[in-house]
Amino acid sequence: MDKARRRLELEKEELQAALEEAESALEIEEAKVAQAQLEVSAIRADIDRRLAEKDEEFENTRYSAQPALFTFFMDRAEYTAGRQRETKTQLKYYTIFRYVFVNIWLVLSSL
Image (cartoon, rainbow, N blue to C red; front, side, top):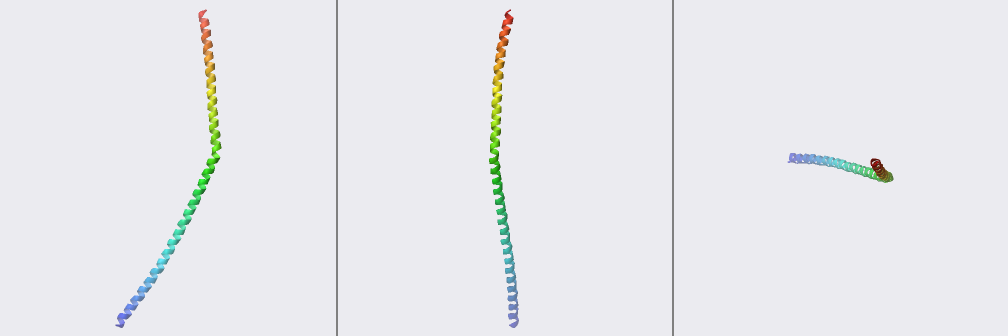
């Protein structure tokens, strides 16, 4: 009976040691998980900060570029309007020239 009792006590001590070892391993793994969660949170915060900076940079660029774009399109519109005026003027001169040429030809052909 003493042998059985002694064997059970040894088995209990072994199981107790295994339990303590498992609990310490669990605590280590929980600490690793907590550390990983902190790192993930830090990375997310960094990504969010960078995205906010890029959004702000984009907005600043867009607002600073608007006057330049407006000027570009206004210059283009003025250039186009100028070309239209030139074309109309050239058309008037061509029409007058044609009219004068036809009249001179008629006069000369009647002689």
